[in-house]
Length: 91
Image 1 (tube, helix red, strand yellow):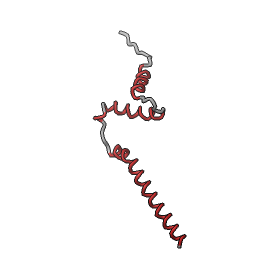
Image 2 (cartoon, helix red, strand yellow):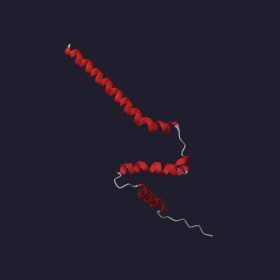
Image 3 (tube, one colour):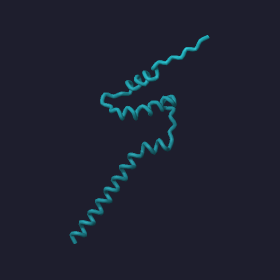
Image 4 (tube, rainbow, N blue to C red):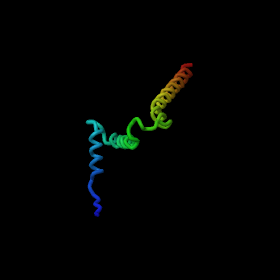
């Protein structure tokens, strides 16, 4: 009996196939590099419906909205402070 182990590039070529599948015409290289770990993780769980939804995942999804709300609040506060300063200068 003989065991033959291939030293081919099947894994690398499979990666090219996946990249071609997810590649959009105007997608930048950074986007593709960020997309692959997500794609691989989903496949590791066996599909999108099997990925566990954790609090960390929900927090990541809501982080941009929270950032924008905080940014608007800071801008409004700075506007109020600048209005107060201009009122003091007028007096």
